[in-house]
Image (tube, rainbow over all chains, first blue to last red; front, side):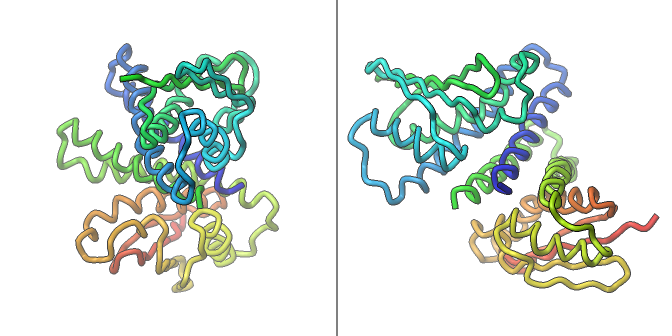
Length: 161
Length: 161
């Protein structure tokens, strides 16, 4: 338990610091995009580091779907304490990972009140996933959306070159 | 293992972000002090949150020494995976906590090369300790010093009113 909390609290502080910091510079409009991208970038580098550790003893992956299954199970359990509840794909490079009780959102009350605030608490995690996939050779765009609090969908779109 | 890494990596990213951010504003001299105090403040708030969780089921403490023992053992194990190696006190409100292999410094090589850089990786942890103690009713000043890499001394001075 201690560990979850340690990570969750530090994550909260980091989000709050980055938003406060931007606000103090008085650039209100540019704010949101910059903050999201700062957090996403931090997540990206951490994701790269994590996946190296997590896959140290793993056999190599058959295909993209195999990688995504690893992310949904092993990666998610290691980082967020549970596995993804539902993985869907169109078999053309788009994957939707649904987590019905996303660790970093469980602190919020479940009304609609905080839905607007929630995206800033997802940017870091989108980065984590993008960084992990990037180190496994998959160049992706990762976004997230929330319809009901604590339930969250991550969309991964593989970028074909 | 995953958890340590998750926290350590996020901590590294946060330190690096805060320092880069200050540098980009071109205030070179004010830098160091501001960054240290930003990190210390983040640690402080996280420490306050953590200690609430950790002491939920603990009996109340007899005296200051009893609190310090809790910090050295339970708190340190929960946060840094090991307990403090040595606790000393002058019985007048000053405590020295020595950790011979401090978790957030193990990534550094052990030469003298990085000694100068190390303090910025201790500010957050000083804040953690100060926050925890503050929530237990002890108003303290917490500083840290390194003589040999990965070995670290935290000095806690209780502020008498």
